[in-house]
Amino acid sequence: MKLINILGLTLLTGMFACNKELDKLRPHNVTYEDQQFSSPTGFTKAVWGVYASVAGSAVASSFNYNDLQLYLSEAHGNTIKALDAGINKNTDAFNYLNSAEKDLSYSYDYWRGSYNIILLINKILANVKDGETNPEILQAKGEALFLRAYVYFNLVRLYGKPYYQDAATSPGVMLIITDNNGLGFAPPRATVKEVYEQVTKDLLAAIPLLTQPRTNSFAGKYPAYALLSRVYLYMGGTFTQPDNAANAKAKEYADSVILNGGYALLQGTAYTSYYNTDNPGNKEDIFAVNTQYKNGLISNLYAMPSQINYSGGLYRPSPDLLGQLRTQDLRSKFYVKNVTPGNPNDSLASIKYMMGYVSLYSPSPARYLRLAEMYLNKAEAAVKAGDNNTAIISLNAIRSRAGIGDTTGITGEALFSEIVKQRRLELAFEGHVGYDYFRNGLPMVRNYTSNSSGPMTIQATNPKILLRLPSDEIIGNPNLKQNEQ
Image 1 (cartoon, rainbow, N blue to C red):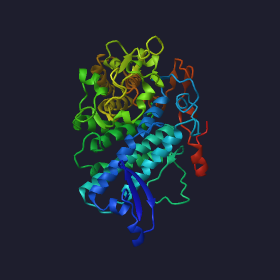
Image 2 (cartoon, rainbow, N blue to C red):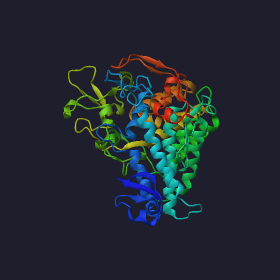
Image 3 (cartoon, rainbow, N blue to C red):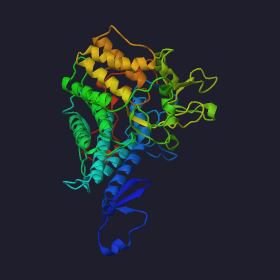
Image 4 (tube, rainbow, N blue to C red):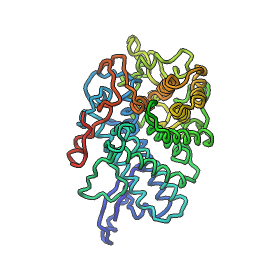
């Protein structure tokens, strides 16, 4: 008898011997596996539990999965500066220290949380029978495959080298795709290439199963296309050494979303208020889990303005980022002024996770995929293929919407550099910039001082671009190889 305890739609798994006497002792507040997967509705609710795990629900002393995904992805870039002067979990990744110790880094929390989600997904997939035809069960299977691809892609970006750096031999992360994980189970790290292959395999397998109507808070065919576009862009090599096949796929899947998905770039005030609104009915959001940020702590990382009787916050927008924004750029409205009056070095904060001076918590969801990224993916893939015209048209959709007008007369590497710049400005605080530098073989340059560290330049080949695996995991699994730094 297998136990699945659903508390707040979060699944916990375990094993129990199955006999009539034990059946009498079943607690009333748990659901067993044979019960959970006895009906199509059970599969649907099980997948809801996975969404709840991904969106997270933070307790007072910790960040949830989504918080950590955003922070760890942003920390290796140059859109933020640290206010915390200490050497601790909050500054570890930002300072490129990448500790393996759980008291000094969020790597332990993130690694464990990611694999807990993966194990829940594998449990759902293992209970789908071969030859299953029920549309609701197949929909649940498709959503589970999408979510597994999403979590594995996030893992391999943080712990594995950029794809162009020997993907076939460099270590990625543990690849666990079944629920047969008993005592002594100690898988090694799969290669980066193997993890990417599993991610694309899961997404392609999910697409024909995703036939039921869903809001943009759930996986669907077009969210899968959008994630495929991102994945293939990461496989697309650098500007000087592009992978033409991967870039063609990135462009193809971006086009599928842009042309056929029914999405639209928000304009004017709808755009400037984008981060003070939730996602139901929002035409730009492709996949955005609608969660109240009062249940998470991501806003604590980026802004706690004194005007709403809060102070502190761990990070602010970097002066370099703010210096790239023109006065007429609508994206400048995503930053509030005078966070801490009287402190000239603490004058702006991002509102992507808070409502300006009104409230610490924004109704804005966790935006995993949105249409603006698809235009930028298409532009980057096109310029790497030498298609400057397509690249400029796609880029100008973003520039024009931002109010800074079209760009003309640039091609090749200059155009590529402008695309990278616009990705940084458009997708700031959404967990992209560090990856965008390193997967393109570019250095991450901080030309400013934070409270915890000074200016720095990190090359794309520096081993410090990777998080270290938690030391507890290395001790528990001797087959895991550490990211040496």
